[in-house]
Every structure is written in C-alpha cells, then in structure tokens.
Image (cartoon, rainbow over all chains, first blue to last red; front, top):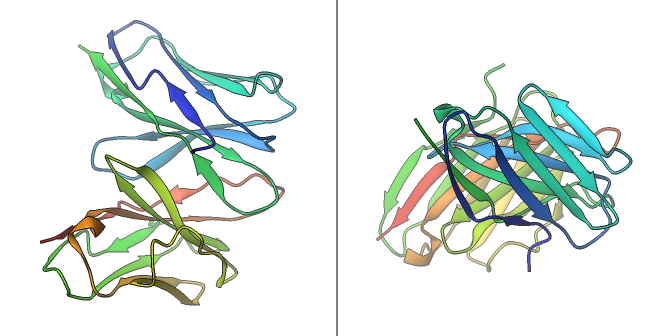
Length: 111
Length: 115
C-alpha cells in the first residue's frame, strides 16, 4: 500500500473559503512535500517541511507536520478558482533518492 | 530554464508495437525519475537514476519495460511490445539531490494510448 494517504479524496468549496487536506504516512521521514497537479499537467512542488519542523507558511499555504501521529495537513486560505487541482503529499524516507507519493485530494473551488 | 522536456506529448499506437518515450532533465540535476499515472493506480514510480545509474527499478511492471540514461541530459523509457493496459500518462521528473531535501521537477507528461 502507499506510504501517503490523503484525506479527503475529493473536496468542493466556494471561492474565498479555506481548504484543508490531510496526509497520513506510515514510516519515519526526513521531510514531507506537497505538490499540485492541474488537469493534464505535471506535478508542481508547493512546499517542503522537514521532520524537525511543525509548521511552515508560503503565501496562502500553511503546512503542519505531526511526526508523532505521522500526519500532515495542507491549508489553502482564501481559495480561488485557480486553486482547482489535485494535491499530493510525498514523503522522503531518507535512505534512497526517491519520494513516495500519496493518492491525492481533488480540490474543486467553485467561483 | 526550459524545465523537464518530454516527447512525444501524445502517442497512440497499436498493441504489439514498440513505444519509446524521451526525457531531457533540467541541466545540473543528478536524479531522474520515471512515473506512470492512471486513474486506477494513481502515481507509480517505475524507475529512478542517480548520476545516470539506475538505482531502483522495482517499480517496472515487467520485462516489456526498459529504461536507459546514456548521459546526464537524456533518458528513454521503452515498452516492447506494448499492451492496452500500458495506456497511461508517463511523467519524467528530475531533481538535484543535496542535503536530503529533494524537490522533484516534473515534465508535462506523455499521454500514451495503446489500442
């Protein structure tokens, strides 16, 4: 099974509302990253949080990490229609070069 | 920087034909990854290279799939013979692995349809 599992699988909100997506993982990590994928496009890196960090901000994005619960959340504040996309968490488990991606959350922001 | 370049962007072929997907990573990046994405299975890592050397190919579905990286600026993923179940979007990504913080940069993908 996958390392990261996002929750919810799909989310529909009104423009201006906040969107919260959660990610759970199974093994110890070096860092956790969030990516966005617009329909028909490749994934784009949004933000990285290290295992010794608890919260990180980037513009309208806020990421939290709870290593004791092996979970992370991505908050998008004041959402816009352009935020409509799939969002994936990815974990770096350290001993290899690879990231392990979760199953993604599909976000729809209604104008 | 042009980003990760993949070609072709779309490929339609018939079952049994050979398919070759190409990738040019970002200059200076030392890791390259091939992924496959489908609705049913999500995003799957097929193989990755570090400094042109294959590190882990455990995600390659079967012997019909092969990947090469002859130099730092070019990689291919070949499927021979192709089957309808290989239909998917194939992504190439590259990164510069340093300080254990690896951000991957994805190409636009190749949408493959095997009839």
